Length: 318
Image (tube, rainbow, N blue to C red; front, side):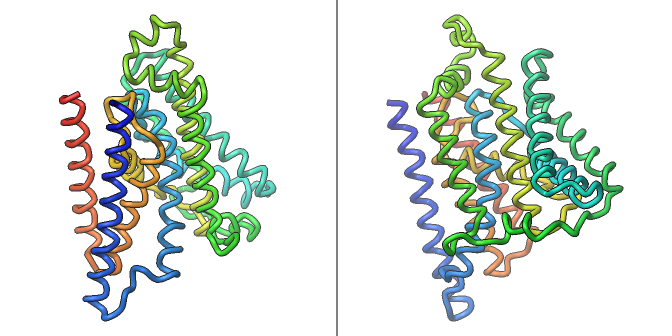
């Protein structure tokens, strides 16, 4: 029954995405006299932009499955990217070494979050809120508040290049989604993640190493946040300490819209990919329709509220 509910929620998200696409096609045609939405260039740009949020949302979905939350992912994105750019441009490391270091920073931030939740028994909201401030502050300290640019072209290819006429970040995002789905669906750690989110006390009594499972979830989330940040930095060719400000909300919203329950123990990362695409389509469509950036925030906020409210109602009924 629960599996049927998951598929029903994901299908409803997919149907909502299709309806929004149709509505935006009609609206842009009515406004400009041509269909600006369903053009090849616009769709490729849309997919490239969606890929960054999809990668980060895949990571936070793993945390939410355990009934946790990670508010630090936007700051971890920025801090990891700043470390990578600093090592590459100022310390003259190769971009490969700098990228590995950046990913390591994200992994370390995730581990610290996990240790705060497990060893210190801090509420996930508190632990990750602290990391959000720490990571953002360290990014500002390293840069002095200024932008770092001058990244090598070979690194920028990972954000700007295409492979088979499809943007490279889209391929990376697809790989991340498939790997995360397989991790949750077919592995022991995946079953443990759902068990901890469904009933932590029962999982502990059943022999599930709860603290290790949570530590893995937060570390994986931090790693994917840094990966998304590095790809976005490669796309822009530069990084600022203020990058990804507020992006954690988009990632969490993508997860909830796609069927990941904030109460834990339910959902699929495939739905998360649909949720990330839906948010990206909404933003892209509003830009094409010349909707004010302020009203865009209002619309996205309303979508988040509706998604969370529906998730809570479904949880109460269940």
